[in-house]
Amino acid sequence: MGYVISLVLASIAYYKYKLDGNDLANPVTLFCGTWAIVTFMATLRLFNMIETSNQAWLVIFTGAMFCVLGTHAGGIVAERVRIVNRANSRIRDRINTNLVNGTVLILFIYYCYNLINTNVIENLISGNSLAYIRSQYVDQFFYKVENPIITVVGTYVIAPLAYCITPLLIYRVIALNKKGALVTVLALNILDAITTGGRYGLFIMMFQFAVGTIIMRKRMPNRSLKEKKKVRKVIIVILIMLFFATISRLEEASQFVESMYMYLCGSVPHLSLRIGESIEPLYGMASLNGLISPLAFIANNIGLHPYSNDYLLFKQIIDMQAYYRIGPSMFINAYVTSFYYPYMDGGLFGVAFFMFAFGTGIGYVYRKMMTTMKIVYIVTYFIFAGMIFRTIIGYPFGSSDGVLGILFALFMFKKVSGSDQKV
Image 1 (tube, rainbow, N blue to C red):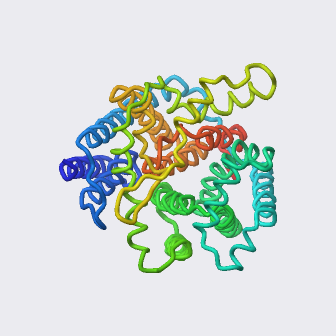
Image 2 (tube, helix red, strand yellow):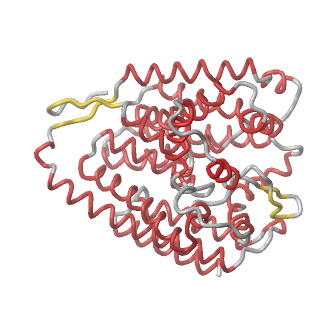
Image 3 (spheres, rainbow, N blue to C red):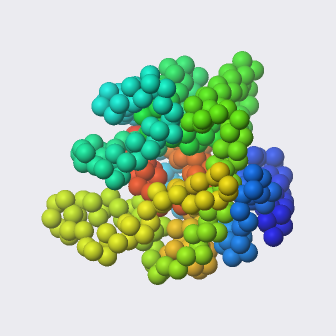
């Protein structure tokens, strides 16, 4: 069944690619292309990975199809809104450089604080892997909370700021040829990887660089060959960084291929194990956790509504830190695909509803970007492109960094009249 789903998704991706004038960056091609690769690789079951159930394949196919339908619906809505708001067409958005620079400074200060106060440097000097650093990070920030203020700031401020600042800096690199922005975005993501032991931020940055290059190539077809080669070099540098980051997390370099395979498609059999467990429907709380969690935190700390036992139980249910075995030497925890949270909320109906909603958001932003080429829509689509890649891990709106990241990004712009759109 996996091969059939992979073929269907690949066919849809290619059809939409040709329909949109060979545009690889359209959301249907990005989403279906990504999941065609993921489902195909999961079906191969390399390294004796466990088999995926038919129920899981049905969940994946349902979610993918409704996401595609959602992108079409979002495009239609964007066209109608464009007609209604034609009178405001002379209003342009401009990146607020002061806010961006201030955000970069805050992130550097936070990462440097973590380097000093979480024994990261000592661990690296001692030869400990990033896997060990990752385990310490999870324990310190999620289970053995020693400094609740730092944990809260990291969860509801730093993570969302990091989520939105990378696409903004990527835009400045690709569209404006800002060398300082290139150094900054690489430094920030390297620091994030070192202090947290994670690597998916580097993967998402590479994905956003690739999508951004495709989009800006259409917007600025006369860009010099030198600039295009520079972007390619950046992507190669990121790939090299990912290689060494992965090797540093492994006992032996020979495990590199198996590790990459697990992180690419291990979420599929993991989903199969998870949905086989019996849980009560959460009615949207899991998929909207990214919005519910910060609101509940604020309500609890200002005394408006303390955490209820039901809410604490809910947080326990959606905790994905427990490891599941998906192969003889493969253990995975947080990677559950974008379909699991919606499935917890309402079975196949929840998957259809929330994936349609996600697709609608992507389709709306993409259509607005292509028809207006406003910076705010370009950067927002970079964020959504990262979310598409992130669907391998989980539902994008199920975590606060995704939801708050989009909101924070919108504050990084200011309105200007006329055609002035300098950055």
